[in-house]
Amino acid sequence: MELNYARLDPELAAALATLPPNFGRIDRGNLQQVREVMAAQRAVPVTSDSVGVERRHIPGPDGDVPVILYRRPAESPQAALLWIHGGGYILGTAEDDRGRVIAESLDCAVVSVDYRLAPEHPFPAGPEDCHAALLWLAANAAALNIDSDRIAIGGASAGGGMAAGVALMNRDRHGPDLRMQLLLYPMIDNLHATPSGRYVNHPVWNRQTSFNAWEMYLAGTPGLDASPYAAASRAEDLSGLPPAYVCVGSEDLFRDEDIDYARRLLDADVPCELSVFPGLYHGGDVFVPHARISRHLTSSVLSALAFGLDLQQPSFAG
Image (cartoon, rainbow, N blue to C red; front, side, top):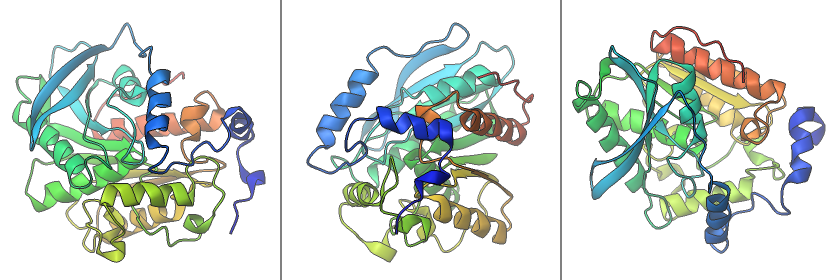
């Protein structure tokens, strides 16, 4: 099956011509090269006059876990978001600009986790690092000037998938209460056995690349036997999870698995808001952040987080 490119948002479609040939085709053979290219693009970190950036190392299951704390100055305790970056479980760092945007737009501290990546550190290394960061955040809320009753977890793409898995892990381990889970086009199904998952020509994160990433993350192809803490779609019981916001693009490989997950959350009596953005391919809002559909997504995400954490609604200008 092939995706109809005529359905892509015109502003996002125009950006595809600027991408390198074979962009998004990632496997074990070229992974290090892709990482080097991404590191070069991050050579000049994004900064903000209004948001402080504090780097820390917190205790993890196998040594210290680096985290970055983004926040505006605050006198009273702030709500907090444990943010998990994307990158297919094999790429990316905590130096994630979306965390800074959230902290700049809302009265919310953002703790971005530099979890261990596959294939060097396959599952469960990453989720264990993130859960350790959540436990640290909750245990040190007073010292961090955080309101322990208003802590959320979230992420985009693989970060959204890991946030969903850590929410399940935290529920089963009777960890700290979470006010919500913020899941932006989450990577949650290692099978992609859906209509959108069968398209072979997605423009950025295609079916084969996704299977390659899952194989590296899971150190094999366990199929239906994959842990729900790795692939949240494998979870049989979604009851007792925190309220969720799920969004995805209509032209995303993950579209149908994310819609199904949102439906299953509702069926399990978990409050869930679902947004499907027309014409959006995977990560299109990152490639073209000022496109109308990208701004619509960002505004929706910020509003959902503000609602979930009882914050003043943002006035997002892009």
